[in-house]
Amino acid sequence: TATPPPSPHSTPLSTPALPIPTGPQLLPSVPLLRGAAELAAEVGARQAFEFLLGRHLDANPRQYTLTPAELAALMADLAGPARTALDPACGTGALLRAVDARPDQELYAQDSAPELAALSALRLALHSRATVRAAAGDTLRADAHPALRADVVLCHPPFNERNWGHDELAYDPRWEYGFPARTESELAWVQHALARLTDGGTAVLLMPPAAASRRSGRRIRADLLRRGALRAVVALPVGAAPPYNIPLHLWVLRRPDRAPATPEVLLVDTGRFAGEGRGGPDWEAVREAVTDAWQAFTRAGRLTERPGLARSVPVIDLLDDDVDLAPARHLPPAAVADGAEQLAQVRERLGATLRLTADLTPPAAGPAAAPRWPLTTIGELARGGALVMRTGGNGGHARVPVLTDHDVLAGTAPSGTLPESEEEAVLTEPGDVVVPVLGGGSVARVIDEATGGAALGRNLVLLRPDRTALDPWFLAGFLRGTANNRQASSYASTATRLDVRRLQLPRLALEEQRRYGARFRALDEFERALRHASRLGEQLVRGMYDGLTDGTVAPD
Image 1 (tube, one colour):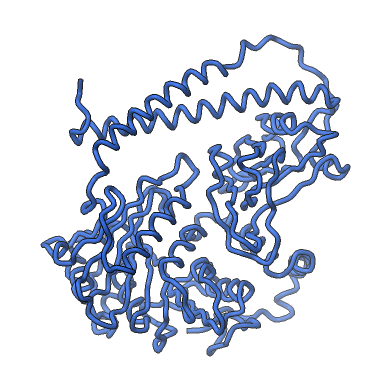
Image 2: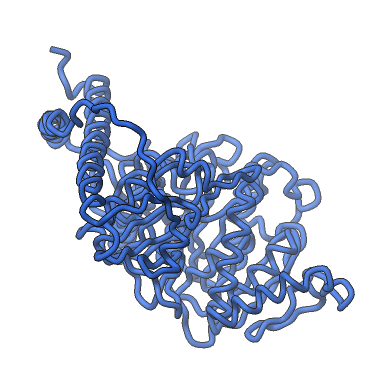
Protein backbone atom coordinates (compact mmCIF):
# COMPACT_ATOMS: atom_id res chain seq x y z
CA THR A 1 0.00 0.00 0.00
CA ALA A 2 1.02 3.62 -0.33
CA THR A 3 0.11 7.07 0.85
CA PRO A 4 -0.55 10.29 -1.03
CA PRO A 5 1.96 13.12 -1.12
CA PRO A 6 2.48 14.43 2.44
CA SER A 7 0.43 17.42 3.55
CA PRO A 8 1.13 19.82 6.41
CA HIS A 9 -0.97 17.63 8.72
CA SER A 10 -0.35 14.17 7.31
CA THR A 11 2.13 11.51 8.36
CA PRO A 12 3.71 9.70 5.40
CA LEU A 13 3.72 5.93 5.27
CA SER A 14 5.98 4.09 2.81
CA THR A 15 5.56 5.21 -0.82
CA PRO A 16 3.29 7.80 -2.44
CA ALA A 17 -0.18 6.79 -3.60
CA LEU A 18 0.44 8.72 -6.82
CA PRO A 19 3.80 9.24 -8.52
CA ILE A 20 4.95 12.83 -8.06
CA PRO A 21 5.51 14.39 -11.49
CA THR A 22 8.87 15.95 -12.30
CA GLY A 23 9.52 19.35 -13.86
CA PRO A 24 9.36 18.29 -17.54
CA GLN A 25 6.14 16.34 -16.90
CA LEU A 26 4.55 19.45 -15.36
CA LEU A 27 5.30 21.76 -18.29
CA PRO A 28 2.05 21.09 -20.25
CA SER A 29 0.07 21.87 -17.08
CA VAL A 30 1.77 25.17 -16.25
CA PRO A 31 -1.19 27.40 -17.34
CA LEU A 32 -3.58 25.25 -15.31
CA LEU A 33 -1.29 25.30 -12.27
CA ARG A 34 -0.85 29.05 -12.55
CA GLY A 35 -4.63 29.51 -12.70
CA ALA A 36 -5.12 27.27 -9.65
CA ALA A 37 -2.43 29.18 -7.73
CA GLU A 38 -4.07 32.52 -8.58
CA LEU A 39 -7.46 31.21 -7.46
CA ALA A 40 -5.97 29.94 -4.18
CA ALA A 41 -4.30 33.30 -3.59
CA GLU A 42 -7.64 35.04 -4.13
CA VAL A 43 -10.05 32.83 -2.15
CA GLY A 44 -7.81 30.57 -0.03
CA ALA A 45 -6.41 27.09 -0.61
CA ARG A 46 -9.33 25.22 0.91
CA GLN A 47 -12.01 27.07 -1.04
CA ALA A 48 -10.01 26.80 -4.25
CA PHE A 49 -9.61 23.04 -3.77
CA GLU A 50 -13.34 22.55 -3.04
CA PHE A 51 -14.25 24.62 -6.11
CA LEU A 52 -11.98 22.62 -8.40
CA LEU A 53 -13.11 19.31 -6.89
CA GLY A 54 -16.75 20.31 -7.34
CA ARG A 55 -16.14 21.16 -10.99
CA HIS A 56 -14.39 17.82 -11.52
CA LEU A 57 -17.24 15.86 -9.89
CA ASP A 58 -19.88 17.80 -11.83
CA ALA A 59 -18.08 17.03 -15.09
CA ASN A 60 -17.78 13.30 -14.28
CA PRO A 61 -21.04 12.40 -12.47
CA ARG A 62 -20.97 8.74 -13.52
CA GLN A 63 -17.37 8.12 -12.54
CA TYR A 64 -17.85 8.42 -8.78
CA THR A 65 -20.39 7.16 -6.24
CA LEU A 66 -20.73 10.12 -3.90
CA THR A 67 -22.04 10.29 -0.34
CA PRO A 68 -24.26 13.40 -0.01
CA ALA A 69 -23.12 15.86 2.66
CA GLU A 70 -26.44 15.55 4.53
CA LEU A 71 -26.09 11.77 4.78
CA ALA A 72 -22.44 12.05 5.82
CA ALA A 73 -23.45 14.43 8.61
CA LEU A 74 -26.15 12.01 9.83
CA MET A 75 -23.69 9.10 9.85
CA ALA A 76 -21.16 11.16 11.81
CA ASP A 77 -23.86 12.15 14.30
CA LEU A 78 -24.78 8.50 14.90
CA ALA A 79 -21.14 7.53 15.35
CA GLY A 80 -20.48 10.26 17.90
CA PRO A 81 -17.23 12.04 18.80
CA ALA A 82 -13.95 10.38 17.95
CA ARG A 83 -10.24 10.98 18.51
CA THR A 84 -9.45 8.32 15.88
CA ALA A 85 -11.71 7.71 12.89
CA LEU A 86 -11.38 5.43 9.87
CA ASP A 87 -13.04 5.28 6.46
CA PRO A 88 -11.81 2.14 4.64
CA ALA A 89 -13.55 3.10 1.35
CA CYS A 90 -13.01 6.84 1.52
CA GLY A 91 -13.86 8.00 -2.00
CA THR A 92 -13.55 11.80 -1.92
CA GLY A 93 -13.39 11.97 1.88
CA ALA A 94 -16.96 13.15 2.57
CA LEU A 95 -17.51 10.92 5.62
CA LEU A 96 -14.32 11.81 7.47
CA ARG A 97 -14.87 15.44 6.59
CA ALA A 98 -18.18 15.28 8.50
CA VAL A 99 -16.54 14.08 11.75
CA ASP A 100 -16.51 16.80 14.42
CA ALA A 101 -12.99 18.09 15.04
CA ARG A 102 -11.28 17.25 18.35
CA PRO A 103 -7.80 17.96 19.76
CA ASP A 104 -5.09 15.52 18.65
CA GLN A 105 -7.51 13.86 16.23
CA GLU A 106 -6.29 11.22 13.78
CA LEU A 107 -8.13 10.44 10.54
CA TYR A 108 -7.35 7.22 8.64
CA ALA A 109 -8.51 6.62 5.07
CA GLN A 110 -8.02 4.04 2.34
CA ASP A 111 -9.37 3.62 -1.18
CA SER A 112 -8.58 1.23 -4.00
CA ALA A 113 -8.28 4.17 -6.42
CA PRO A 114 -4.95 5.97 -5.82
CA GLU A 115 -6.29 9.27 -7.14
CA LEU A 116 -9.18 9.20 -4.65
CA ALA A 117 -6.86 8.36 -1.77
CA ALA A 118 -4.72 11.35 -2.73
CA LEU A 119 -7.75 13.64 -3.12
CA SER A 120 -9.08 12.59 0.29
CA ALA A 121 -5.71 13.13 1.99
CA LEU A 122 -5.36 16.65 0.64
CA ARG A 123 -9.02 17.51 1.24
CA LEU A 124 -8.92 16.36 4.87
CA ALA A 125 -5.59 18.08 5.52
CA LEU A 126 -7.00 21.36 4.19
CA HIS A 127 -10.23 20.92 6.15
CA SER A 128 -8.90 20.20 9.65
CA ARG A 129 -5.86 20.19 11.89
CA ALA A 130 -6.11 16.43 12.40
CA THR A 131 -3.28 14.06 11.54
CA VAL A 132 -4.29 12.46 8.23
CA ARG A 133 -3.10 9.00 7.20
CA ALA A 134 -4.44 7.96 3.82
CA ALA A 135 -3.44 4.94 1.75
CA ALA A 136 -4.18 3.45 -1.66
CA GLY A 137 -5.07 -0.20 -2.00
CA ASP A 138 -7.82 -2.81 -1.83
CA THR A 139 -8.90 -2.64 1.82
CA LEU A 140 -10.22 -6.19 2.11
CA ARG A 141 -7.21 -7.79 0.39
CA ALA A 142 -4.47 -5.39 1.53
CA ASP A 143 -5.50 -3.50 4.65
CA ALA A 144 -3.20 -0.50 5.14
CA HIS A 145 -4.11 -0.09 8.83
CA PRO A 146 -4.10 -3.64 10.27
CA ALA A 147 -3.10 -2.59 13.80
CA LEU A 148 -5.59 0.28 14.06
CA ARG A 149 -8.27 0.27 16.76
CA ALA A 150 -10.38 3.33 16.01
CA ASP A 151 -13.09 5.01 18.08
CA VAL A 152 -15.27 5.36 14.96
CA VAL A 153 -15.48 3.71 11.54
CA LEU A 154 -17.61 5.34 8.82
CA CYS A 155 -18.02 3.54 5.52
CA HIS A 156 -19.95 3.72 2.25
CA PRO A 157 -18.68 0.44 0.77
CA PRO A 158 -19.08 -0.68 -2.84
CA PHE A 159 -22.31 -2.68 -3.23
CA ASN A 160 -22.86 -6.12 -4.75
CA GLU A 161 -19.21 -6.94 -5.47
CA ARG A 162 -18.52 -10.56 -6.38
CA ASN A 163 -14.75 -10.17 -6.69
CA TRP A 164 -14.09 -8.96 -3.14
CA GLY A 165 -11.57 -11.64 -2.19
CA HIS A 166 -13.81 -14.56 -1.19
CA ASP A 167 -11.42 -17.27 -2.40
CA GLU A 168 -8.16 -15.92 -0.97
CA LEU A 169 -9.53 -14.57 2.36
CA ALA A 170 -11.26 -17.71 3.67
CA TYR A 171 -9.12 -17.91 6.84
CA ASP A 172 -8.87 -14.17 7.52
CA PRO A 173 -9.10 -13.39 11.28
CA ARG A 174 -11.56 -10.55 10.62
CA TRP A 175 -14.44 -13.00 10.06
CA GLU A 176 -15.36 -13.21 13.76
CA TYR A 177 -19.06 -13.51 12.95
CA GLY A 178 -18.81 -15.99 10.07
CA PHE A 179 -17.22 -16.29 6.65
CA PRO A 180 -19.22 -14.13 4.20
CA ALA A 181 -20.67 -15.78 1.11
CA ARG A 182 -19.39 -14.68 -2.28
CA THR A 183 -22.61 -12.66 -2.72
CA GLU A 184 -22.25 -10.94 0.68
CA SER A 185 -19.45 -8.45 0.12
CA GLU A 186 -21.24 -5.93 2.34
CA LEU A 187 -21.02 -8.32 5.32
CA ALA A 188 -17.28 -8.56 4.70
CA TRP A 189 -17.09 -4.75 5.03
CA VAL A 190 -19.21 -4.89 8.20
CA GLN A 191 -16.79 -7.33 9.81
CA HIS A 192 -13.76 -5.36 8.61
CA ALA A 193 -15.23 -2.26 10.31
CA LEU A 194 -15.82 -4.16 13.56
CA ALA A 195 -12.28 -5.57 13.47
CA ARG A 196 -10.82 -2.04 13.26
CA LEU A 197 -12.82 -0.70 16.24
CA THR A 198 -11.65 -0.37 19.79
CA ASP A 199 -13.86 -2.10 22.38
CA GLY A 200 -17.04 -0.03 22.65
CA GLY A 201 -16.27 1.82 19.40
CA THR A 202 -19.03 2.60 16.88
CA ALA A 203 -19.24 1.89 13.15
CA VAL A 204 -21.87 3.29 10.80
CA LEU A 205 -22.15 1.75 7.33
CA LEU A 206 -24.38 2.59 4.38
CA MET A 207 -25.87 -0.69 3.16
CA PRO A 208 -28.14 -1.91 0.35
CA PRO A 209 -31.53 -3.04 1.72
CA ALA A 210 -30.98 -6.60 0.45
CA ALA A 211 -28.19 -7.08 3.01
CA ALA A 212 -30.83 -7.04 5.76
CA SER A 213 -32.77 -10.00 4.37
CA ARG A 214 -30.73 -12.13 1.92
CA ARG A 215 -30.79 -15.77 3.04
CA SER A 216 -27.08 -16.18 2.29
CA GLY A 217 -26.24 -13.72 5.07
CA ARG A 218 -28.67 -14.85 7.77
CA ARG A 219 -26.07 -16.76 9.84
CA ILE A 220 -23.78 -13.73 10.09
CA ARG A 221 -26.72 -11.42 10.86
CA ALA A 222 -27.81 -13.80 13.60
CA ASP A 223 -24.34 -13.82 15.19
CA LEU A 224 -24.10 -10.02 15.00
CA LEU A 225 -27.39 -9.91 16.92
CA ARG A 226 -26.53 -12.56 19.50
CA ARG A 227 -23.23 -10.95 20.43
CA GLY A 228 -24.66 -7.44 20.63
CA ALA A 229 -22.61 -6.03 17.74
CA LEU A 230 -25.56 -4.78 15.64
CA ARG A 231 -27.29 -1.95 17.48
CA ALA A 232 -29.56 -0.31 14.89
CA VAL A 233 -30.86 -0.53 11.33
CA VAL A 234 -32.22 2.69 9.80
CA ALA A 235 -34.16 2.61 6.52
CA LEU A 236 -33.50 5.86 4.63
CA PRO A 237 -35.97 7.52 2.25
CA VAL A 238 -35.72 6.92 -1.49
CA GLY A 239 -33.33 9.46 -2.97
CA ALA A 240 -30.98 9.66 0.02
CA ALA A 241 -27.88 8.47 -1.90
CA PRO A 242 -26.92 6.66 -5.11
CA PRO A 243 -28.60 4.55 -6.39
CA TYR A 244 -31.38 7.08 -5.83
CA ASN A 245 -34.26 4.73 -6.68
CA ILE A 246 -33.55 2.38 -3.73
CA PRO A 247 -34.27 3.07 -0.03
CA LEU A 248 -30.82 2.35 1.42
CA HIS A 249 -30.12 1.36 5.04
CA LEU A 250 -27.73 2.52 7.72
CA TRP A 251 -26.30 -0.13 10.04
CA VAL A 252 -25.01 1.10 13.39
CA LEU A 253 -22.61 -1.36 15.04
CA ARG A 254 -20.54 -1.41 18.20
CA ARG A 255 -17.64 -3.65 19.04
CA PRO A 256 -18.94 -5.41 22.15
CA ASP A 257 -17.01 -4.65 25.32
CA ARG A 258 -19.49 -6.64 27.37
CA ALA A 259 -22.64 -8.67 26.72
CA PRO A 260 -25.80 -6.50 26.79
CA ALA A 261 -28.05 -7.24 29.78
CA THR A 262 -31.30 -7.13 27.82
CA PRO A 263 -30.27 -7.07 24.16
CA GLU A 264 -32.56 -5.12 21.86
CA VAL A 265 -32.03 -3.63 18.41
CA LEU A 266 -33.32 -0.24 17.25
CA LEU A 267 -35.26 -0.28 13.95
CA VAL A 268 -36.15 3.03 12.27
CA ASP A 269 -37.99 3.67 8.99
CA THR A 270 -37.74 7.23 7.61
CA GLY A 271 -39.41 6.47 4.27
CA ARG A 272 -42.18 8.99 5.06
CA PHE A 273 -39.64 11.82 4.65
CA ALA A 274 -38.95 11.13 0.96
CA GLY A 275 -38.80 14.31 -1.10
CA GLU A 276 -40.65 15.30 -4.22
CA GLY A 277 -39.10 15.18 -7.67
CA ARG A 278 -35.40 16.02 -7.63
CA GLY A 279 -35.64 17.71 -4.24
CA GLY A 280 -34.32 14.74 -2.27
CA PRO A 281 -35.44 13.76 1.23
CA ASP A 282 -36.45 16.18 3.98
CA TRP A 283 -33.04 15.86 5.59
CA GLU A 284 -33.90 18.01 8.59
CA ALA A 285 -36.82 15.71 9.45
CA VAL A 286 -34.76 12.57 8.78
CA ARG A 287 -31.90 13.75 10.96
CA GLU A 288 -34.18 14.83 13.80
CA ALA A 289 -36.17 11.57 13.80
CA VAL A 290 -33.13 9.29 13.60
CA THR A 291 -30.89 11.06 16.12
CA ASP A 292 -33.74 11.51 18.60
CA ALA A 293 -34.62 7.80 18.44
CA TRP A 294 -30.95 6.75 18.63
CA GLN A 295 -30.18 8.97 21.63
CA ALA A 296 -33.26 7.74 23.51
CA PHE A 297 -32.33 4.13 22.68
CA THR A 298 -28.69 4.48 23.79
CA ARG A 299 -29.73 6.07 27.09
CA ALA A 300 -32.24 3.39 28.07
CA GLY A 301 -31.21 0.36 25.98
CA ARG A 302 -34.73 0.26 24.53
CA LEU A 303 -37.21 2.62 22.86
CA THR A 304 -40.90 3.15 23.45
CA GLU A 305 -42.71 2.33 20.25
CA ARG A 306 -43.24 5.17 17.76
CA PRO A 307 -45.82 3.76 15.32
CA GLY A 308 -44.68 3.75 11.72
CA LEU A 309 -41.32 5.31 12.62
CA ALA A 310 -39.23 3.47 15.23
CA ARG A 311 -39.17 0.75 17.88
CA SER A 312 -36.65 -1.43 19.64
CA VAL A 313 -37.03 -5.16 19.11
CA PRO A 314 -35.68 -7.88 21.43
CA VAL A 315 -32.95 -9.84 19.68
CA ILE A 316 -34.76 -13.11 20.38
CA ASP A 317 -37.72 -11.90 18.26
CA LEU A 318 -35.44 -11.48 15.23
CA LEU A 319 -33.68 -14.84 15.44
CA ASP A 320 -36.05 -16.82 13.23
CA ASP A 321 -35.25 -18.72 10.04
CA ASP A 322 -34.86 -15.54 7.97
CA VAL A 323 -33.25 -13.12 10.48
CA ASP A 324 -34.86 -10.33 8.45
CA LEU A 325 -33.73 -6.93 9.72
CA ALA A 326 -35.71 -4.70 7.31
CA PRO A 327 -37.35 -2.09 9.61
CA ALA A 328 -40.62 -1.94 7.65
CA ARG A 329 -41.25 -5.62 8.43
CA HIS A 330 -41.19 -5.03 12.19
CA LEU A 331 -42.71 -1.57 12.65
CA PRO A 332 -46.41 -1.17 13.45
CA PRO A 333 -48.34 1.10 11.08
CA ALA A 334 -49.27 4.62 12.10
CA ALA A 335 -52.47 4.92 14.11
CA VAL A 336 -55.53 4.31 11.92
CA ALA A 337 -57.46 7.26 13.31
CA ASP A 338 -54.56 9.60 12.60
CA GLY A 339 -54.30 8.25 9.05
CA ALA A 340 -58.00 8.80 8.31
CA GLU A 341 -57.89 12.25 9.86
CA GLN A 342 -54.83 13.17 7.80
CA LEU A 343 -56.54 12.03 4.59
CA ALA A 344 -59.52 14.28 5.36
CA GLN A 345 -57.16 17.21 5.96
CA VAL A 346 -55.27 16.54 2.72
CA ARG A 347 -58.56 16.41 0.78
CA GLU A 348 -59.66 19.72 2.28
CA ARG A 349 -56.34 21.39 1.51
CA LEU A 350 -56.41 20.02 -2.04
CA GLY A 351 -59.86 21.49 -2.63
CA ALA A 352 -58.74 24.91 -1.37
CA THR A 353 -55.59 24.77 -3.49
CA LEU A 354 -57.52 23.83 -6.64
CA ARG A 355 -59.88 26.78 -6.08
CA LEU A 356 -56.89 29.07 -5.64
CA THR A 357 -55.29 27.65 -8.81
CA ALA A 358 -58.46 28.43 -10.78
CA ASP A 359 -58.43 32.00 -9.47
CA LEU A 360 -54.75 32.43 -10.40
CA THR A 361 -55.10 31.04 -13.94
CA PRO A 362 -53.65 33.68 -16.30
CA PRO A 363 -56.14 35.54 -18.49
CA ALA A 364 -56.27 34.82 -22.20
CA ALA A 365 -53.14 36.10 -23.91
CA GLY A 366 -53.67 38.91 -26.39
CA PRO A 367 -51.62 39.10 -29.61
CA ALA A 368 -48.79 41.62 -29.79
CA ALA A 369 -46.24 42.60 -32.41
CA ALA A 370 -42.73 41.34 -31.64
CA PRO A 371 -40.85 44.33 -30.15
CA ARG A 372 -37.34 45.32 -31.17
CA TRP A 373 -35.83 45.94 -27.75
CA PRO A 374 -32.20 46.94 -27.28
CA LEU A 375 -30.60 44.04 -25.37
CA THR A 376 -27.97 43.78 -22.66
CA THR A 377 -26.45 40.79 -20.86
CA ILE A 378 -26.09 39.83 -17.22
CA GLY A 379 -22.32 40.17 -17.60
CA GLU A 380 -22.68 43.77 -18.82
CA LEU A 381 -25.10 44.61 -16.00
CA ALA A 382 -22.68 43.16 -13.44
CA ARG A 383 -19.76 45.16 -14.84
CA GLY A 384 -21.90 48.30 -14.77
CA GLY A 385 -22.94 47.81 -11.15
CA ALA A 386 -26.66 47.21 -11.84
CA LEU A 387 -26.40 43.84 -10.10
CA VAL A 388 -23.95 41.72 -8.09
CA MET A 389 -23.17 38.10 -9.02
CA ARG A 390 -22.17 35.48 -6.43
CA THR A 391 -21.67 31.71 -6.62
CA GLY A 392 -22.48 29.31 -3.77
CA GLY A 393 -20.83 26.33 -2.13
CA ASN A 394 -19.31 27.37 1.23
CA GLY A 395 -20.78 26.50 4.61
CA GLY A 396 -19.48 29.44 6.63
CA HIS A 397 -18.77 29.49 10.37
CA ALA A 398 -22.21 28.27 11.54
CA ARG A 399 -24.67 25.73 10.20
CA VAL A 400 -27.64 27.41 8.48
CA PRO A 401 -30.23 25.98 6.07
CA VAL A 402 -28.79 25.64 2.57
CA LEU A 403 -30.73 26.39 -0.61
CA THR A 404 -29.75 23.66 -3.09
CA ASP A 405 -30.20 23.52 -6.84
CA HIS A 406 -32.79 20.78 -6.24
CA ASP A 407 -34.75 23.15 -3.98
CA VAL A 408 -34.76 25.82 -6.68
CA LEU A 409 -35.86 23.38 -9.38
CA ALA A 410 -38.61 21.86 -7.21
CA GLY A 411 -39.76 25.15 -5.68
CA THR A 412 -39.25 23.81 -2.14
CA ALA A 413 -37.78 25.24 1.07
CA PRO A 414 -34.01 25.10 1.79
CA SER A 415 -33.22 21.45 2.52
CA GLY A 416 -29.44 21.06 2.25
CA THR A 417 -26.43 21.39 4.52
CA LEU A 418 -22.82 22.32 3.94
CA PRO A 419 -19.83 21.55 6.18
CA GLU A 420 -18.72 24.43 8.38
CA SER A 421 -15.94 26.42 6.78
CA GLU A 422 -13.70 29.36 7.61
CA GLU A 423 -14.84 30.90 4.33
CA GLU A 424 -17.95 33.07 4.46
CA ALA A 425 -21.17 31.56 3.15
CA VAL A 426 -23.20 33.49 0.56
CA LEU A 427 -26.48 34.26 2.36
CA THR A 428 -29.60 35.01 0.35
CA GLU A 429 -31.68 38.15 0.84
CA PRO A 430 -35.30 38.87 -0.17
CA GLY A 431 -35.30 40.14 -3.74
CA ASP A 432 -32.26 38.14 -4.83
CA VAL A 433 -32.64 36.04 -7.99
CA VAL A 434 -31.12 32.53 -7.88
CA VAL A 435 -30.33 30.54 -11.03
CA PRO A 436 -29.21 26.87 -11.30
CA VAL A 437 -26.34 26.40 -13.75
CA LEU A 438 -26.69 22.65 -14.39
CA GLY A 439 -29.47 20.59 -15.96
CA GLY A 440 -30.54 22.59 -18.96
CA GLY A 441 -33.79 23.92 -17.44
CA SER A 442 -34.94 27.52 -17.68
CA VAL A 443 -35.48 28.29 -13.98
CA ALA A 444 -34.93 31.42 -11.90
CA ARG A 445 -36.26 31.92 -8.37
CA VAL A 446 -36.87 35.20 -6.56
CA ILE A 447 -35.98 34.86 -2.88
CA ASP A 448 -38.83 35.73 -0.51
CA GLU A 449 -38.86 36.56 3.21
CA ALA A 450 -39.23 32.89 4.18
CA THR A 451 -36.15 31.79 2.20
CA GLY A 452 -33.97 34.83 2.94
CA GLY A 453 -31.00 34.08 5.16
CA ALA A 454 -30.36 30.61 3.69
CA ALA A 455 -26.85 29.81 2.46
CA LEU A 456 -26.38 29.44 -1.29
CA GLY A 457 -25.56 25.86 -2.32
CA ARG A 458 -23.38 24.49 -5.07
CA ASN A 459 -24.29 24.88 -8.76
CA LEU A 460 -26.25 28.07 -8.04
CA VAL A 461 -25.59 31.66 -9.07
CA LEU A 462 -27.10 34.53 -7.08
CA LEU A 463 -27.96 37.83 -8.75
CA ARG A 464 -28.59 40.78 -6.40
CA PRO A 465 -30.13 43.60 -8.45
CA ASP A 466 -29.84 47.30 -7.62
CA ARG A 467 -33.53 48.07 -7.00
CA THR A 468 -33.14 51.56 -8.46
CA ALA A 469 -32.11 50.05 -11.80
CA LEU A 470 -33.64 46.53 -11.98
CA ASP A 471 -36.91 44.96 -10.86
CA PRO A 472 -36.23 41.43 -9.45
CA TRP A 473 -39.33 39.84 -11.00
CA PHE A 474 -38.60 41.42 -14.38
CA LEU A 475 -35.06 40.02 -14.13
CA ALA A 476 -36.20 36.51 -13.14
CA GLY A 477 -38.94 36.37 -15.74
CA PHE A 478 -36.74 37.20 -18.71
CA LEU A 479 -34.02 34.82 -17.48
CA ARG A 480 -36.55 31.98 -17.78
CA GLY A 481 -37.08 32.40 -21.51
CA THR A 482 -36.35 29.14 -23.33
CA ALA A 483 -34.54 30.80 -26.24
CA ASN A 484 -32.50 32.90 -23.79
CA ASN A 485 -31.33 29.78 -21.92
CA ARG A 486 -30.56 27.90 -25.13
CA GLN A 487 -28.19 30.57 -26.46
CA ALA A 488 -26.41 30.83 -23.08
CA SER A 489 -25.90 27.08 -22.54
CA SER A 490 -22.94 24.86 -23.33
CA TYR A 491 -23.24 21.11 -23.77
CA ALA A 492 -20.90 18.41 -22.48
CA SER A 493 -21.31 14.67 -22.90
CA THR A 494 -23.07 14.29 -19.54
CA ALA A 495 -24.46 17.69 -18.56
CA THR A 496 -25.70 21.06 -19.77
CA ARG A 497 -24.10 24.10 -18.13
CA LEU A 498 -25.59 27.58 -18.20
CA ASP A 499 -23.30 30.60 -18.54
CA VAL A 500 -25.37 33.12 -16.58
CA ARG A 501 -23.29 36.06 -17.81
CA ARG A 502 -24.52 35.44 -21.38
CA LEU A 503 -28.23 35.58 -20.49
CA GLN A 504 -29.93 38.57 -22.10
CA LEU A 505 -32.38 41.24 -20.90
CA PRO A 506 -34.14 44.03 -22.77
CA ARG A 507 -33.17 47.57 -21.78
CA LEU A 508 -36.41 48.97 -20.39
CA ALA A 509 -37.32 51.85 -18.11
CA LEU A 510 -37.91 50.83 -14.49
CA GLU A 511 -41.65 51.54 -14.72
CA GLU A 512 -41.98 49.27 -17.76
CA GLN A 513 -39.88 46.60 -15.97
CA ARG A 514 -42.37 46.66 -13.10
CA ARG A 515 -45.29 46.09 -15.48
CA TYR A 516 -43.61 42.92 -16.76
CA GLY A 517 -42.49 42.02 -13.24
CA ALA A 518 -46.06 42.08 -11.94
CA ARG A 519 -47.13 39.65 -14.66
CA PHE A 520 -44.15 37.36 -14.03
CA ARG A 521 -44.93 37.38 -10.30
CA ALA A 522 -48.53 36.37 -10.97
CA LEU A 523 -47.28 33.50 -13.17
CA ASP A 524 -44.97 32.39 -10.35
CA GLU A 525 -47.91 32.29 -7.89
CA PHE A 526 -49.91 30.23 -10.38
CA GLU A 527 -46.99 27.84 -10.89
CA ARG A 528 -46.51 27.36 -7.14
CA ALA A 529 -50.23 26.68 -6.69
CA LEU A 530 -50.09 24.05 -9.45
CA ARG A 531 -47.10 22.36 -7.80
CA HIS A 532 -48.79 22.38 -4.42
CA ALA A 533 -51.96 20.89 -5.88
CA SER A 534 -49.93 18.18 -7.61
CA ARG A 535 -48.18 17.23 -4.35
CA LEU A 536 -51.44 17.16 -2.40
CA GLY A 537 -53.09 15.10 -5.14
CA GLU A 538 -50.30 12.52 -5.08
CA GLN A 539 -50.48 12.38 -1.27
CA LEU A 540 -54.26 11.86 -1.34
CA VAL A 541 -54.09 9.17 -4.03
CA ARG A 542 -51.32 7.26 -2.22
CA GLY A 543 -53.17 7.53 1.10
CA MET A 544 -56.39 6.24 -0.44
CA TYR A 545 -54.62 3.28 -2.07
CA ASP A 546 -52.93 2.43 1.23
CA GLY A 547 -56.15 2.84 3.22
CA LEU A 548 -58.20 0.70 0.85
CA THR A 549 -55.60 -2.06 0.73
CA ASP A 550 -54.92 -2.22 4.48
CA GLY A 551 -58.62 -2.05 5.41
CA THR A 552 -58.59 1.33 7.16
CA VAL A 553 -60.73 2.99 4.46
CA ALA A 554 -64.08 1.59 3.35
CA PRO A 555 -64.75 1.32 -0.42
CA ASP A 556 -68.09 3.16 -0.15
